[in-house]
Amino acid sequence: MKKYFLPAGMLVIFETVAITLWLTQNNVFYLFNFSYIGISVSLGIFLFIRNYGYARRVAQLLVGLYMLIYLGLICKENMQIEGFWYYLFTGTFEAATIHYAVAKIAGPFFFGRGWCGYACWTAMVLDFLPYKVPKTPGKKIGWIRYITFAASLVFVSALFLAHVANIESIMFWAFIAGNIVYYGVGIILAFAFKDNRAFCKYICPITVFLKPASYFALLRIKCDKDKCISCGKCKKVCPMEVDVTDPSRKRKNGTECILCFECVKNCPKDAL
Image (cartoon, rainbow, N blue to C red; front, side, top):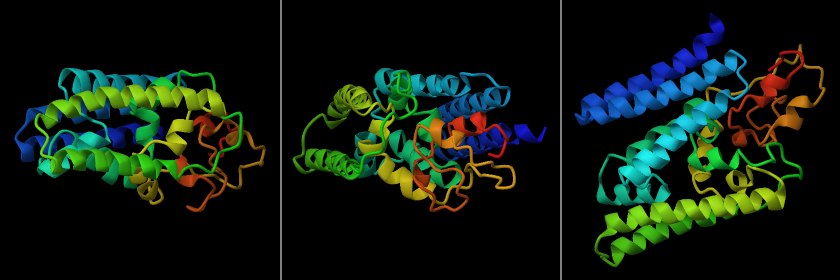
């Protein structure tokens, strides 16, 4: 039963967050929201343990579609980084503020960039493209993410400084426009670099939060050197080009790991 500790533990973490926010914020929505996400992610991990080939995709679609369609389009909450800045500036601890605090600021200290692998609605679409494993070496253009990060902050700041009316409505349309741009750029980069995750590696502003915290992540892929035969299969199937055979936190592309477990699944000696 030890192999089921991970999905059970993940569910406990999300349920703890769900109940805490429900009671402290006096809003039952948080109980439903984080319980649903926790169940979806835990289900994906459980299915992986049961050797279901599309386990991670199940979690991606359950969480990604919920956040994109229900929270974003139906509830009109901007769950992109612009929404985070908006609620942060208004001093409102709800919606995108809580989402970022839990999933993208505090969360990575526990489960690294698991968000990118199991919940991101942008990656959810990009992972359907044909280049699941990069066909070309990584590019040294990760600095672009800092430009997009700064641009989002400047955009929202300008709206407040200019005292623009109907900012909430602008945030909704910014969410729609932002997603269209993200999907468009992501698809173009995927085909240009032959890498589904090129957008995640070079453009996505959220990684400015995720990467530093994920360096200290408690949940990470580890290699049993006594079992490893240095066949290199783990490196060949990794979509983020992480050297999981290196046990140190300074391993190559270590903060890029999205916990997709492709390396674990393809290791012939169960060393990971």
